Length: 127
Image (cartoon, rainbow, N blue to C red; front, side, top):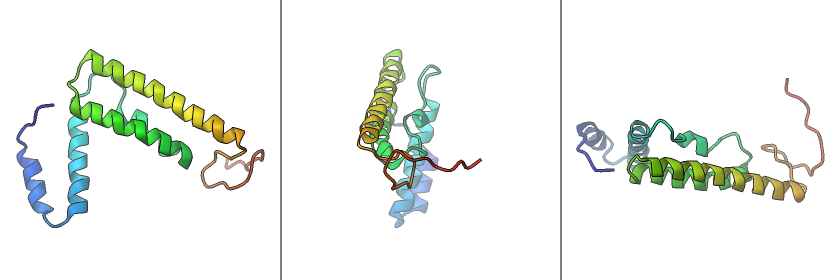
């Protein structure tokens, strides 16, 4: 993606001088805003690559694919090939998450967030 001068981004950088964490978060949001405006209609969205409600071990798998998808969206020009690569990456992420889930279940670990009990057991319904 070609670099373009953005006076608002420069102003935000001036406002955050000396506040590196806030500036880093702002710059990340700017990148995500740019990514959101340069996606093709048939591409998966960046949010498809990470589900914050997954149990922690599965989040660790999923976030790796999110990082690659973000890099692809920031770096590669919008095209049919990029869209296909993102769809393939999304399928690979789903397979990796399912593989990790199966492995953890085979070891007798519960997949519910915060649960430390050994499987099999039943959680009380929250409805």
